[in-house]
Amino acid sequence: MISTTEFRNGAKVEISGEPFVIIEFQHVKPGKGGAFVRTRLKSLKSGNVLERTYRSGETLDEPDIEEKEMQFLYAQGREFHFMDTSTYEQLAFDQDQLGDSRDFLKENMLVKILIYKGKPLTVEVPTFVALKIARTDPGVRGDTASGGTKPAVLETGATIKVPLYLEEGEVIKIDTRSRSYVERA
View 1: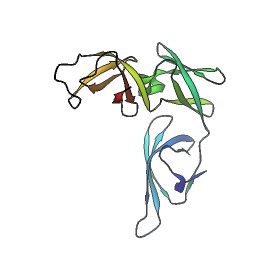
View 2: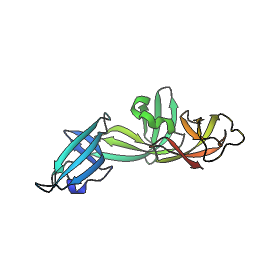
View 3: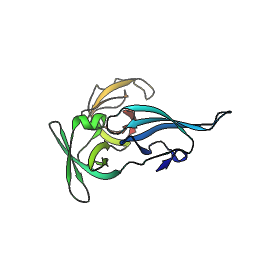
View 4: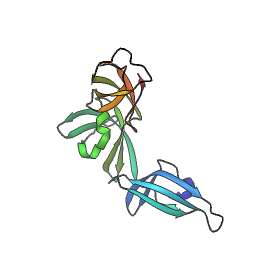
């Protein structure tokens, strides 16, 4: 059981037999009446977002979620294959199950896989990844670090915006949450 006083961003709760993660929460103490907590919850199964309000001190169930560290092996067609680093057991995910995180998967990368009641749910890629620029337009004389941006295709096939001065072959650090360039790696 998890109480509303223990709510944190990223905490996992179970509502009506479905696992959710808390995206954001706000403790509210009105001048009149009891305190309550406003929350935004995202379903780990479907990705739907709910907004719920709970009275202060109310408790919710904790889901039976196991987090395993696995290594991304390879992609074959629409399937992405992962291996448990301790038991060498392999799992395959369909590209639809992975969502946008598949754009940042690189062979031999370690990821976290959430398993709910024995079934794999989602793949969490690291927050920051270093990838090589595979294709981009060449920089033009006079481009500055504070200038505009241009599209770049990464070695995994993802397209992101990068500063004008970056060229093909450079390794860059990317924030996977916002799909944005951070710095040169």
